[in-house]
Length: 115
Length: 115
Image (cartoon, rainbow over all chains, first blue to last red; front, side, top):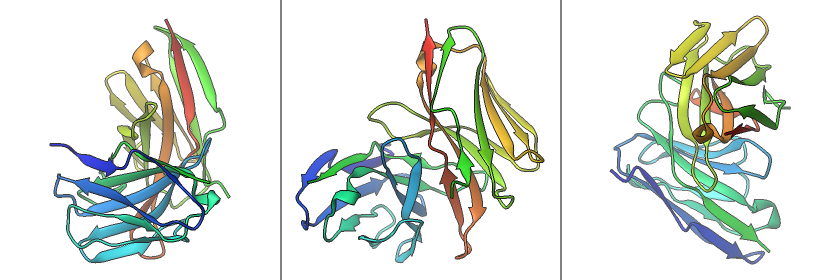
């Protein structure tokens, strides 16, 4: 069981470039989430998905897009990178809805620097 | 508007002594609380949780206390070990306007256990 895997580990982008952060889980979890963590701050929810084909916005969705075509994969797309998107991005998954006698399993994170 | 507050950015404790990490919240709709532990360059990992209908939950060296009237929870680690040195995030769960549970994280407290 690899758990939640994320690629790449680190990336530098120029302003205006686009990229996709990959996230895969092998635990057959229905729920998947994308968070960002800015320095000295807590994690903020960007988007989440309650199952294949279903996604919804979190607290900070602007500048991002997601898709969920399979149970395993939940990629996060940045279309026009901006310096404000410099952050560490964490993907997470859970079997039940978060917070309902359930925990989330996090990936190792992707560090993104936009210059 | 920070709904989950961890007012101590850092805490240093001697090995073998008790570590007490504090968390305050403002949203009375939170019904489930979790603590996550994070090592550098890794994703957060679940540590312990508590439902709003309880006031204490224990798991080995870790105990979480919840005071609903004060909107305050604390994590006690006894005895503290050097391997406990990490950033600890407090998180709280409530149903969002879309009808899904959503976690709100505090900024974290960096615990250093001194041998």
